[in-house]
Image 1: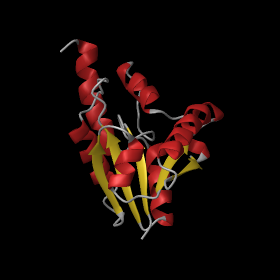
Image 2: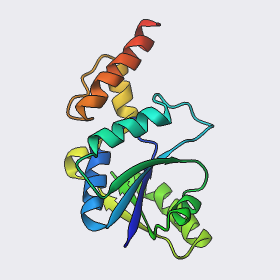
Image 3: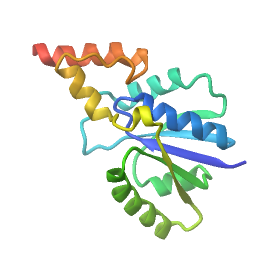
Image 4: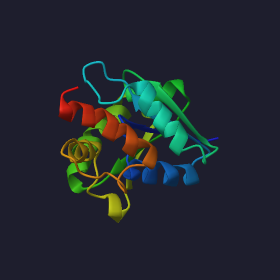
Length: 164
């Protein structure tokens, strides 16, 4: 059985993330969506909230599990017996930093491969940061994130806008 890891902060999960995860699930026997817990960052949503959103929107994929992790991705992948890390790319600007990380991971553990998957054209501009900014300034995120996330974004960012 080939296990693939789809890592990310997913703050929040976007339709671009879902595109990559669904396509990965069609290729590999098992996919672990790994939500990064980075203590040096303050995400909008807690790791538990991000995991919940992902579990709900990926429930139709029986070979996908959602977990969180801290630390080095390559160590996490090894602990899960994963042989593949799948990273989504939107534009050439994503490639440079992802390429550096992939080479570093390969040096740390030559048994784990990193595969880059291009997101669908309709999501090539989409990022979690852009979605948060859009909602913060009163824009409508429908079509960019799953409906479950739309309401959560509006609730959290609406409170920040109003200072509550």
